[in-house]
Length: 125
Image 1: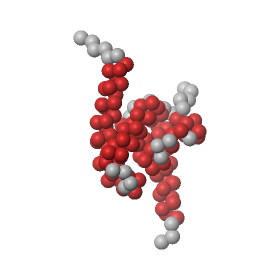
Image 2: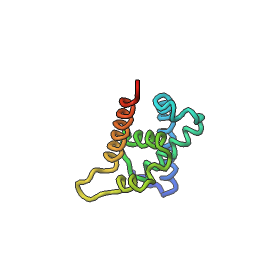
Image 3: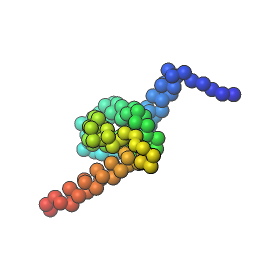
Image 4: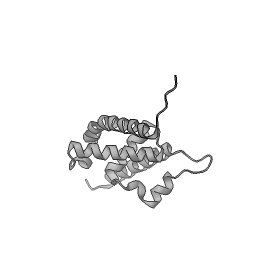
């Protein structure tokens, strides 16, 4: 037996999956990004995470780790970070042999972590 969903049904399934993932991520983000999430109540944080996961889907991110990194970037850099021209160029599909979107998100997250660590190391003690 084969199941077929029309676009409306698929959109509802996708939204339900994003909401479930957002519920899973909310306490993780709250615990690990205290400063970035402090001003958001639970409903607002959930809305931000769900919106970020919607953008994850639009970019074609497939790996859970890369999707989580995208949500972190969204919360730290702002909801339009991926609309900056340089990020848009980075995330745009390349030709054969270029990294996929998942690898690009992970690389951007690694770069941000490195810059944050470097900035912390250079602060006066």
